[in-house]
Image (tube, rainbow, N blue to C red; front, side, top):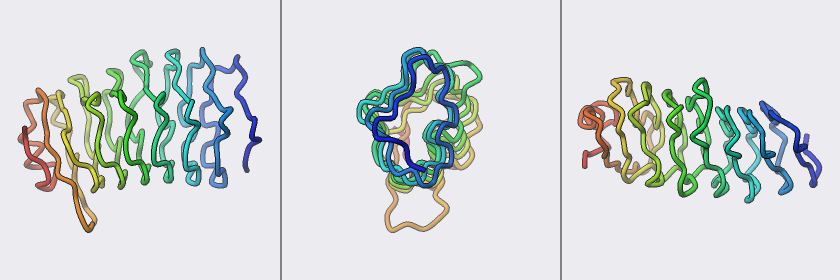
Length: 212
């Protein structure tokens, strides 16, 4: 089911929770789509929209948003996100980063300035199976409040460059592990203040990481 080319979300709407969830036939989100100022919950809005290739270039996330988990999970064909797709640092403490970009198989990069909100203490599987993801912006830091980063980048064979980790959690099993065979696998450099950087490089990356 597709939507009209001039579809808009009314300005009084406070939630788009699961609005298009698992709409496999949805090809395009119209350029008129906006999250209205004042909205509180955008969680799961595009969850499982396997066939959309992009979001409107002017789409941004208002600072009022409290819940955003899984907003683009399983968007398999999106290559790039709008520049305004930056999470606010005022999310609810019950929101989470687990599986946020899981199975965004075509996603190549994140917007400049994208960061991990301090409310996201659980990022297990956050980027799992992001096969095309090449790098993270310098603004993205796994902060010291993160308690679980198991398999956060598992099956991200294209990922390379510097990954900043300040968390001292020991929950990092298979964090960068590559299970399947690929023609090439990117090399990763771990940096940051975490006391576990070497242990992560040794045991959670399959040998693809070094420590800065």
